[in-house]
Image (cartoon, rainbow over all chains, first blue to last red; front, side, top):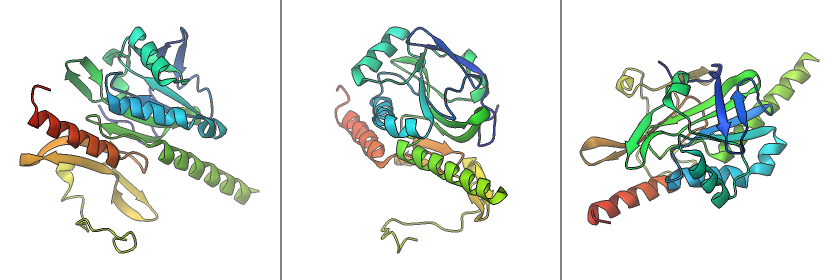
Length: 167
Length: 83
C-alpha cells in the first residue's frame, strides 16, 4: 500500500452525498479541479474550521474552476447537521468506509467517537490526476485554502505560458 | 533565508536522505535539486509524536493556530484530567 502522490490517478470512489445523490470520482469531475477533503468527523473542531475556511473562499475557488468535495465516515444525519450549522454548500459524502478507500492508504483513528479517517486532502486536476496530496496522522495538518488557490493559480499560469510558447 | 524572514528559531541545514531515512519522507526533484517534501511534527515530552503531517508537494502544512490550539487543549487536559 502506498499513499497517493503527485501524478497518481485518483482511485475510483463513489460518494453518497447528503443531498441524496451520488458522485463518482474521478469519472464525474464537476470542474477542471477538485479539492477533495476527507475529514475526521463533525466532532472535530479542527475539521469544522477547515471546512468553513474552504466555504469562505467559495467564490474565488469557483472562479478558478475548483469544486470542493468533503467526505467523512460520519453518518448522514450527523453530516447534514454539521453542514447546516456551518452553512456549507459543498457536496459532502457521508458514511465512507475503509472498504471504499483501500487505494488511498489513509491513516485511521479510534477514540470515543468511534473509528474514523484521519485527514487526507487532495487537489485533483483534469483526468483525475493528483496534483497535490496531504496526509495527517491526527487533527493537525491540512491543505490551507490559500495555498490550494495559489497552487491552482500557478498551474494555470504555467499552462498559459506553455501554450504561448507552442504557438 | 533566515535573515531575510527575520527568523529567530533554530534551523538545521544540510539534512540528507540518510539522516532522515527513519522519517520516511517524500522527496522532490526539480530545477532546485533534490529535497525533502514538507513533513512536520509536534513532539511532546519524551520525544513522543503528538501530531504529524506529510505532504507530497508544496501544499499541506500544520497551521500554527491549530498547533497552538492543540497544545492548549493538551495542557488543559493534563491540568484538569476530569474536564
